Length: 126
Image (cartoon, rainbow, N blue to C red; front, top):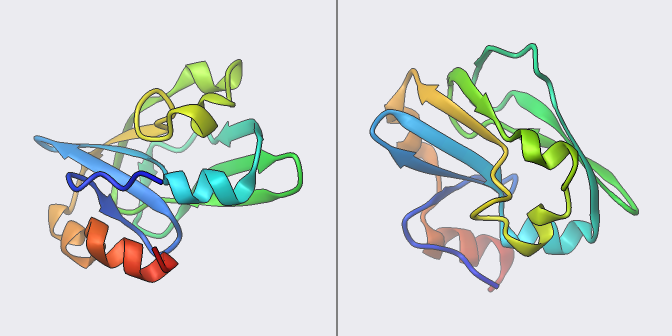
């Protein structure tokens, strides 16, 4: 399992990568492994503003459906449209092509409440 040190993690198994004031959000390698084969991603295209902790959509696997929660607040600037036709990329590349949403951070200090890779590994017992 992979837990890049340059990311921040939530207790709900999302990650965020920040460059400048843009945050890219996805689900962790651990989460996709626990879900199993991802078959559908539903990100609400009408959400333009999100708050930390908000559900931004759902991820559906063969056996379950789970909410995707926003790790930080911000303005939605891009949704990964390729996930509509290729949701399984979340299983094969959760930290790369499997990203879900990009936001313009409205409150970067919220990043301080997130976990680093060591704390996240401890949370999941790895």
